[in-house]
Image 1 (tube, one colour):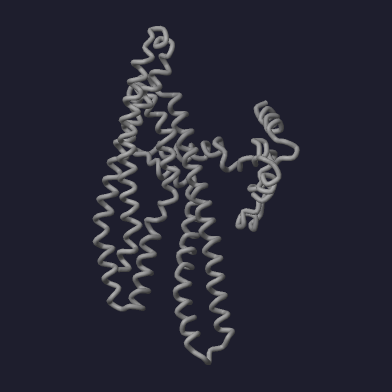
Image 2 (cartoon, one colour):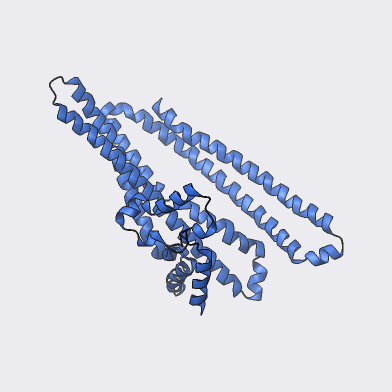
Length: 336
């Protein structure tokens, strides 16, 4: 019955001249996935007329909340048999494969990134040799071109798999927290406010999704530093040590900035929890507030929390801007 009803809803939403009744991402082949050509019909339709809700593709079944929730729950149930369940391990086992593929693609991208500087050296030697064959120069140019194209494809697929993994992590956490909130005991509900639970599903889950784009930086940053240092050593000799020393001196500063950012973010999240809790209390008791004409006093209370939150948010943004200036200025400092 439920399946039949969902099919009827899908048919109502889909228009005859739209694409709301299909999922080309699921049906597309290898080339379609590499070139993202499954999006072309939708873009063509958007070029002809404004897109409507019924024009949008159906969501890939692998990315639907029901499938993600069931898959995560299987691994989470296994973790619950342990003395100390590990949420990160359950999430990794459930959705880690695309993330590992993304890591491999990032490795390919970073390796191809060093092809250009190496081949340019050969091109300079080729141009300096009047007796060099033309085919050799054409080969060098072709290698740079192919490496650049390979970089582009690898990087785009890397971000796609990272975003896909982040989406699934967020969906799994949101559904798990929501299901848990429905079966909380009275004592557990007293320990956690509605605002805290809401923030878990909205803000914290979103942070988990965002971090998937940066987790691979743990290893590929080290890989880039090692390979770059080796290439600099080959070209400059021991003179490259000066740049390495500057980077080592910057590490304590970046660690301190990261610690400050983490502290400010925790304070910001605490204020957000308080503000959401107050807003929920106001909405829950809106009838009593209207009856007693307490609108102004409760409005002032909510605005007080909101002002405090904005102050914390402003401080956090200033600190993040300063950190961005430092991180972006390090490469220029190293070159000097």
